[in-house]
Image: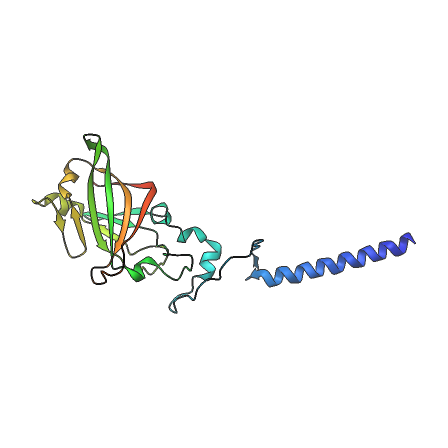
Length: 207
């Protein structure tokens, strides 16, 4: 009797393991299993035809959180200036609405980290073009020509790529924090401005 019971348990265990393997195989992607024990409330919307973000979202969902704008930011040194990279984000959970596909410009609110007037940090506003980069994790980099900016005689600096309000503050402070990023389109003024406040500001040295 015990022998029959052992055979029955072994058979049931084999069938159970086979069923689990089939289920996991169905839920796997290129041999890597992604278990999701809670069903999503909505399916991803259709993705733009020139790239498919579905796999990227499954592996790196943080790319599309608003804070990723500054969490993924970094700076590289270039001749006479700096190149600023900001993380690209989607405007909603569909992940097909990359912000630079909707807005032509972005504006950074920069606060000095070490100089203030009457308790308030001095502020600059940097406006630049907003374009989808070849690497969709990032917005097209913004080149900040620091040497040219410091030579300007006016209060503000402008070239074909950027506009820096209160540029003369660069002579007073070299340490700056990105506090807020807004997106807008000069042509499509009917589209409301989209803004993201940086909960963990990104620091830049401009000197």
